Amino acid sequence: MLENRNYYLRLCLKHFICSGTGANALIKKEELVKRVTLPYSRPLPCLCIEGWSAVIDAPRVRVCPFEDRLEELWLGITFDPLEEVLSWQPACPVAAAVSLCQKREDGICEDLPLSSQNVSREKVTFTKVDAHPQLCMKFTAGSQSWIRCPFVDGRFQAPEVSVKRQQGHEEVKMLSQINATFSVGLCVKSEASTMCQTTETHSVRVEKHKSVGLNLTGELCKGNACLQIKRVDVKYAATDMHCFDKCDQSPSRKLPVTKQGTLALTWVIVPIGICLSAIIIVTLVLHVMLTVYQRRKERGNGGYCASEKQTDSALNGVVPTLQTHPAHLGGVISGHSLQHGHTEKVNLLSH
Image 1 (cartoon, rainbow, N blue to C red):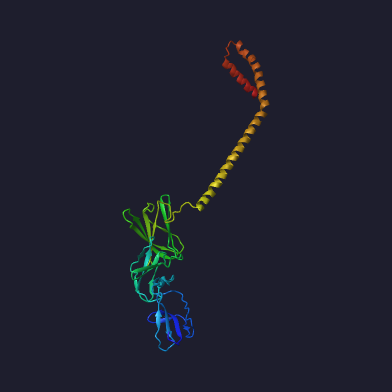
Image 2 (image 1 turned 60 degrees about the vertical axis):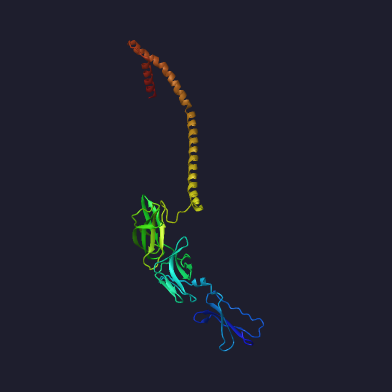
């Protein structure tokens, strides 16, 4: 800062030249405390402070305090869902390689074939890209790499696959959030390797929000069978792996017993218990009522039984008189004959 001269400061982005990002700040020569505040939005590597004295053709001094903040460059990824175009443009010139990759569960991002591009300051564009939650951008500068996944926020979802086993037959269905064509491959994992050997492949067209059945001939419920699903109507796509348990469970959806499941089970058991209790109570009440009724009936029939006994005694007095008649005929009447005659007489009287 030259003596007896005002001094200018500004923020600028350094490319071939340093382009200003706002108004210049002035430090007046008579100010004892020479201080100025320069607001900025992001600490970019090419963001610098430039100062010069208020003199024609004065030399300019430039300080760039964020040169090592390369991670700030990997923002600003945009996606056009209609054109299916993924793009990124560096805010600062940088020597880097940009590629697409699929992020695995262990955090490693595997590069998609033929997707790498070198960049310095121009815009990077990938056309016909599947908006898959596991599809990411990999930025490599020097010996460092950074991964950015623009579709992981939940706006875009992978196709859903479900399998049900009914009467020995496996029914597999797929549901997509967009209109797309998929390659569906049935593969089998071996115990000696983590690779999945494909046994058959089908091409399936799926309409938006419409479930489609997959006609697969292989067995999915063996415990080592999986489905590999990938979009084939785009240039860059991630591959989904859906593996199934032994069986009647949807892939990656084997849920433990939760509070909701316990509550649902309770709503089934409680009504059944109430119904059984009601049946038992009604049965006991009917049994008691029937017992009381039978006892009252027996008491009411007591007089009838007594008269019946008197009739039997009268009959006993009549039978000997009748029995004397066959004796005059010289016949012999046995005890069986007497009993038989007595029975016939009772029957005649009853009639």
